Image (cartoon, rainbow, N blue to C red):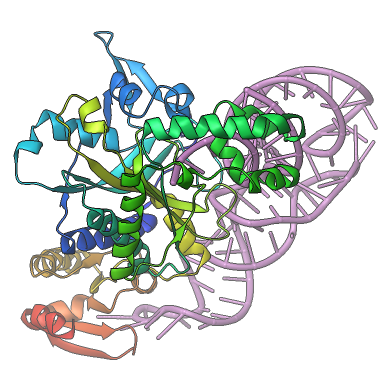
Amino acid sequence: MGIPRGTYDILPNEVVTWHYLEKIARQLCERYAYEEIRTPIFEETALYERGVGETTDIVEKEMYSFTDRKNRSLTLRPEGTAGVVRSFVENKVYAELQPTKWYYFGPMFRYERPQAGRYRQFHQFGVEVFGSDDPAIDAEVISLGLEFYRSLGIEGVRVGINNVGNPEIRAKYFEKLIEYFTPFEAELDTDAKSRLYRNPMRILDSKHKRTQEIATEAPSILDFLDKESMENLEQVKFYLEELQVPYDVNNRLVRGLDYYTQTAFEYMVEELGAQASTIGGGGRYNGLVKELGGPEVSGIGFGIGLERVLLALKQQNVSIPTAAPLDCFLVSMGEEAKKASVRILGELRKAGLKAERDYLDRKLKAQLKTANRLNARYVVILGEEELANNQIQIKQMETGEQTSIAMDKLVSYLLEGK
RNA sequence: GCGGUCGUGGUGAAGCGGUUAACACACCGGAUUGUGGCUCCGGCACUCGAGGGUUCGAAUCCCUUCGAUCGCCCCA
């Protein structure tokens, strides 16, 4: 019996790193005045069918769906937005003070072949803002995401932004694209051909040489935007500049989910492996709240793939805090000393110190070795002699200095040295 | 769903048809009696992902299967 495909265990060693990511994200969100929301890890399947879009790859072939004992179809969440929107609607949060600014953190599930930076259970940190159409909010959200990477010390994150208009505009644009590419159909590579009627925008970033040539002359979505969308894009750009967020307008940027309107953006970093250059993305979804049964409230958010963030950290050799070292390791010899050391251990811990002892009946030497391995700052040695004198030996591991002190001075001694 | 590569102890790996499966690291123990990080010595794979086949003989060749990994599609 093994671990399910595309999943992995996060062992204690790595958990430290995850705590760190969460801490950075939380602190950041706090400063931006976002609040954490926790929604279920699974939802009714219909939520994603309606919310994410029936024709998206996610819904068509990547959902982890199952029926429960009452035959209800449920799905492990493939992304965060739909559930958060559902919660926003269901709890009538739109009736409260707006905008609503939320963030979340947690596992997502997609049935795909695992590869570099892609898993079936992966983790996202995301943000959603409801109730404001102000382009300044778009800029805030984009800037918050970028700040996250920066706080972690990841370099060279590029922000790509675009405006994808609304579903009507996109439909019209798709038509034009198809119209444009159809005469070249025979010359397109096989991938592009298959994309032609499904998602012609994808042809635009083809890696195939001839396809690329053809695509250079293809119409840009920016020429199809209505006045409102155009203006919106300009405003977002303006505020990004105010926030000193560098960006590139990328008129070929599309996102995989159907619900996006207006602003769409991506965070990218070079050389992360074929799948992983995009380390986060998001956009506006002005129709989604209504689509899911709420009032006409607009929204915008992003999702950041944490496995990919970890990849970037690793690749850029960014150092990450490690677990706190042991304050003290208790070494004891003999039955009586053991009893005393167990008692002392409890006292040290009550005093707030990180303390440990040997539970494998190791010899003195091996106990010291263990203390060393555990990175203990101090070792306390307790044997017959010490017991008789009510003293303990305390040794500072780094310097090797060892002194004898009264047993009841131990806690204060260690707290001082901390 | 499709394609490439790979699968030997806790880990990294050698071996690629012939009696006891290198080596390194890790781990455990020891180098006279109560002291770590260095050194030295010793221990640690009824077995080479699993199943089948070829052969006098296979970790080494063939088939199947499972798994990992990378890539395509798509995405975080």
